[in-house]
Image (cartoon, rainbow, N blue to C red; front, side, top):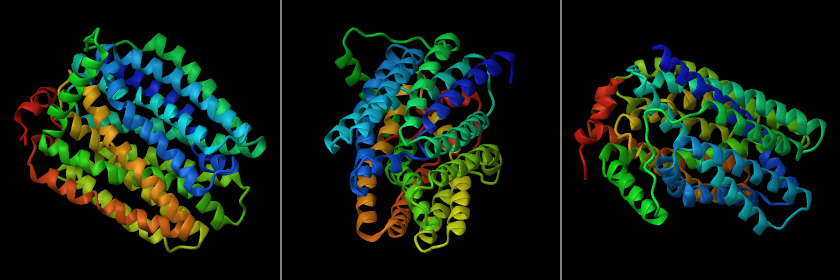
Length: 427
């Protein structure tokens, strides 16, 4: 990696560190926070579902911002929007607000995250290529995941400890403050490199154009299409399991007020992300095809969820949680590397946002469904059901594998990556 590429990577890792640290202050206590505000399990996960609905609604429009106004502008808007909506969440908790208000603010939280999704990843890939980097993307994404995992470890553990020492609302205030600090950091460090925004005076027309382009360069590329169609199942389940484990582990632990235990669960996931990011290139080297990594990871995750559904021992559940997180994290960098090798630079942020939209659409359905099953049958049964839903992603990954895309075979060079969309099979 040359000096210019190393600088781009350092900026990417800095942004990832700050953003993940800010976001993760609440991840260990979010479900407990919602339940403490008086929401039922169904309402708590319905609030999370409205968050994903917000992501579904705004993914494409904010993708237009990233591709039309710049990835830096998109990132800056994301920090401000997410800080403001996080503070509104705190106010709702303070006043025990009715569920409809939680739904509205959850949608705004989703809007904040859509400014980030696709934009940072697109900024990184274009800047690396502009700098002459020709290595595999798994290595860079793996490092990013390691940094994100370390930040999540610090943030979630701190958030749980802060909540234990003060109350469940303080971590939300800390998150808002760190996000505002990240606005200043991005203003200083982040500049669009290797990409020229295509500004438009007609936002609605631009939205239609990039939506069409994202379909042409996403869903119409068959190997990309099938990976995207797998996302609603795997992403929806992953979000639910992460948040459901907080009250489930407290239930197994036997102390509903042990908020630090909920923070510990998130910290274990974060630590596993660090290990998984380090293992990602090695996991990739074990298989000839990238899709093999994704399929094996999905099958193992399904098995772990099913076992979690039957265990009643706290420490066993913690071990299973750690194993799932490591397996999932080891495969996670492979997926964006596979997709990025098949899409063009011009619509990269929008296609990646569309991919995120597919995952969010699954979360909007899966979370309230599993939350309701937790109300009716308990958290353990809901985790077993989550395992069955997770398995539904595997046939789509197998279908992507059968398309024989060159991106599935190896870590393609920069030149080979740029040829991807023209060479892949289309519907």
